[in-house]
Length: 317
Image 1 (tube, rainbow, N blue to C red):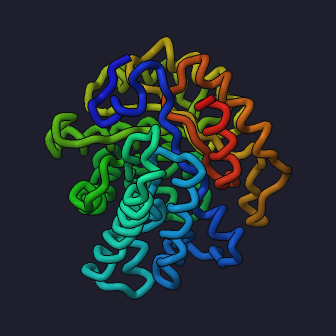
Image 2: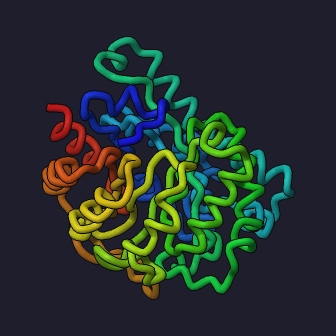
Image 3: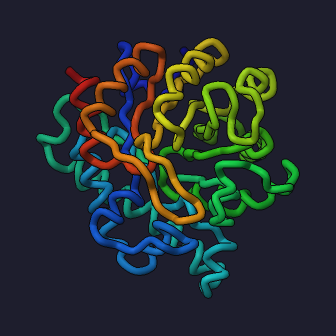
């Protein structure tokens, strides 16, 4: 496995880097209303301190990496809300600073440093579909070219690249075209030597990403590139992960990322989740994912600090 220096303190000796869980999920659990095109970005405007508190809770639960509240914040989306370009930029920088502050507060306590490496802050780069807020990040049917997608992502990408985050997490990627756009941006801003970026797809089953591109067809087009520090899957039902991880293991030498949703299903028409989840069962499943080769493991939608604590307890015993 080709391990970038940023991950070495966490992965050396066959260990696992533990990601956090769903930010929006935990904000909703605290009674906050996220029914808004900006989703968790709405809370950046209204109550940013609670976002820092959620980041801290995930660190105390065992997370080695916390992901910022920038998934659904874009210049276009924030300016449509009435912010100026400068105000939109400041809000995205605030999201990163909240995560950095949480990490630094956690790390300033001596007992929190025992047996741990200093946690990372990953700046979330949500897909184009997150800006549309219509569920298309699970389809990828945007009707845009690679160059058009790169043009859309470029301003936020450049801002987050210089925001103080340790890496960029290009997450919930539904299409090969959008993945190629991210690859184009990594190369444009200096390649892997200057840009630490990870890439995480959504899947409709163990064999196809959301735009119905076969996973096996992506390898020759993308995974050979050296510009990413990790590649994997997120916001996908956990039952698909064994098959996905097995294929990734045979196709890439990068660390494999796995942070699925809880197993509940999202109803885009009714705007609600169906099903139930149990953190203990989720924590048990991660052992199989780790055995199969996943190196960065956490949770996405409908997972919370209890899920991350269960993962930490299972993988650090």
